[in-house]
Image 1 (cartoon, one colour):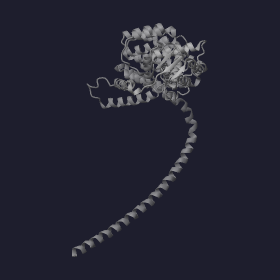
Image 2: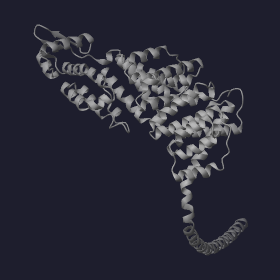
Image 3: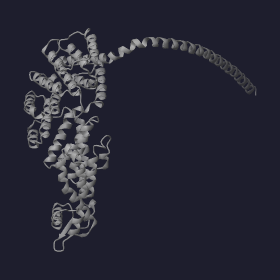
Image 4: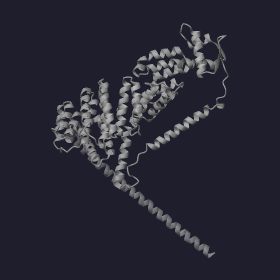
Length: 539
């Protein structure tokens, strides 16, 4: 009993001390809060006084800061170009092509900010003043304004001329050529590209190959813009032969695509196929070049009536193309729609509703609708309505081929709808406008039965077409073939993704240091950024 009394007394004492301690904490917290509020009021007063002083100072400095904003952007672009030049020099000295590739990606990001004064200052920095390359490239640039000349004078006053390498000289040619094409000075770009190709013929270095492939592309583009594409066909063939002898695979890729484009521009499909079949084959080095090759291959296969191979090549090109290359993907989808219609397939509606393609694919959507219905009159109306669009896309001849598919689709719908129908009614439903429509309908039906397009028989005595009953499609091998094609497509995509993986050289022999790891991560981040913003001018 005494033990329990002692326990209760001790518990009561502890509870009383706890209440006193909590009251003390509340008092201290209230006092601290009041002190903080007082301090915050003083701080707000000081900030207000400082802001009024800053406003007065900024009003006085506006007149001084405004003129410097006009030259800051120019100076920053010039500084970026100097950093790119240092990157090219480092890549040329260490024989690392990846650094030069990185320099090209950085240049593409800067091309919209280039000005004549900036390029002139960069030429004075990268090339020896008074040299042949400096004088030639400076002559292609337009004359600067007075303000640009003042900026050029201020920036070149602190420059130190460096001893340029061959890679840096070729880069200067590329930079000037890109600027001239963007400024739509096509005659100057044509002269500059010819001079750059003449300079390239005297160089045989693997670090120049990346820059050379870009120069080949803009060389062909400058002549195409002036309408003189046929003039450089011999030069392109000679350059392709030299690139093959030097084992320049990236140059071979680029030049092969340029030659195919040259032949297809003048509808020389047989010569293009002969060149493609005899050109050396190797693993693709550039995704852009591989997409172009697939597109040209699809066009050649379409003209040669090999629609299955053409469909595969065109869809793969559209799938592999970068998101920024909208014009290229639109062209791939236009040709792919025509090829699928020629194969007897009807493209899904989602193909025509892709982002940014609705307006461009509208004529082909209406054409697909006419083929799907099998209405020959509607097909003629659509073909006449969008004849200019089809002519500019060079798909007019393919659309003429679709007339037979429209008739066959209409005949298939008739055979499904009617178990027996006269040939005169078939001619009326197909809207055949020939002098003897019944005879034409009879020949069309007999050819469709022979080709297996419809499952029917022809009664010549009574002039009837008798359709057979449709069986269960799941009792045939057609579902198995569909699954097999989809599985093969997925496996092919997986194999291509594995082959596209890139690894640093000798990664299995030496361990990566911390500095190299940071540099590699920085390059990967820049690569991911610039690939997303890559200009679709290459397409």
